[in-house]
Length: 171
Image (cartoon, rainbow, N blue to C red; front, top):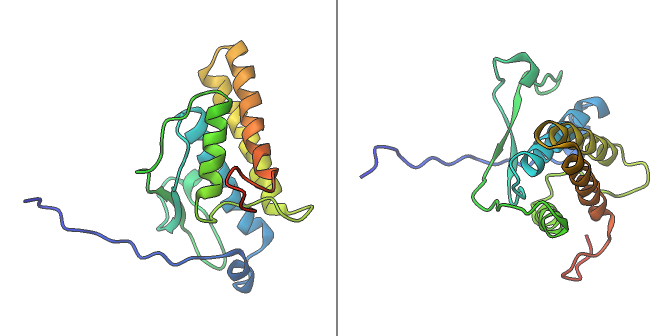
């Protein structure tokens, strides 16, 4: 018998309209989009996993200042990523990108999504994903392979702009 007891986290969704009701600024909310983009880029291009069904949660602050988030409304805190059990290895080709895009769309709506023209959170997410992907890819790959993978990262981030996915549902 295990000495560890079952542990359950209580999830309380926090949607964009609730951030606004709390009086959080666009800059505050953009921090979360950046962290999500950075996490997903590292998972894709360093870990080579699709990020299927991961969850982002707000947590107590880290002691390491670069990892700590600050907010006048929520106070000091950090953001954790959980639930890697459905993540799968992704091939570093177009099929792998499609797998990662399916995981992105299949995930609960945690990520910023492309929507209205000029949507700031999607723009922050998209640009930061491209930037972090490029950095990660450049560090762990030879120049020719790095350029090929950078093209794949741009392919991934542009796939969500398609309004229907392979199952015919609108996203």
